[in-house]
Length: 256
Image 1 (tube, rainbow, N blue to C red):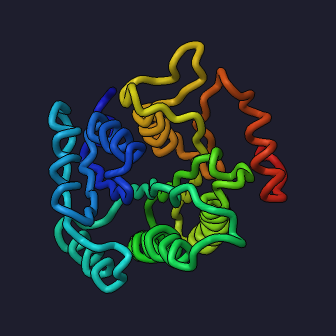
Image 2 (tube, rainbow, N blue to C red):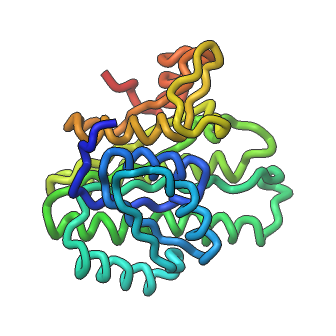
């Protein structure tokens, strides 16, 4: 990959997830300086091991509890002080674990979804987009797995979380467009974790985390201003069928 992001500062929330690992690798291969907040020292060690073979780019890891909004604001101040503005921010959070249907769901599981997933998604947007508003510049990308939009009985929380993400993405995009910020919500599906740096796997309809990262780099460079974008396993499901199904669930017209 060409060093198309050399000198660019990129914030990645969820860098320690399987998808996040692939995104970080692709960004560093493109020459970016990646800022990755971590909730534990072990996460930092693991991520550094994942990217140690990449000759380009730079990884900056920061130990911070992002759901704690006070610490998250301190992180934002530190980023501005040390690096200046952010050109790109990516939020690729893990969905909630498989769960019982809502009528049987333990209350603690609901609170966990709010605290560890939905609140974190909001805090990232609230803090990073505010930084970009001050500079009237930047691109913000949130990643959503279409598999979690399917109404399966063991995925009630994941389904709700994915829909909440989309509604917040639409609101964030509307509120920041006048500041010159591009907001992109990227749908993925059929993700394989066996080949993180491969592209689409021939005949299998699978997309790798590395391919998702490459797609993000391409979208950043393209200048696209559409809200919804797609990085799907093409051989298993027809692209347009997946898109139409998702957009129908959202009661939106399919993007042209």
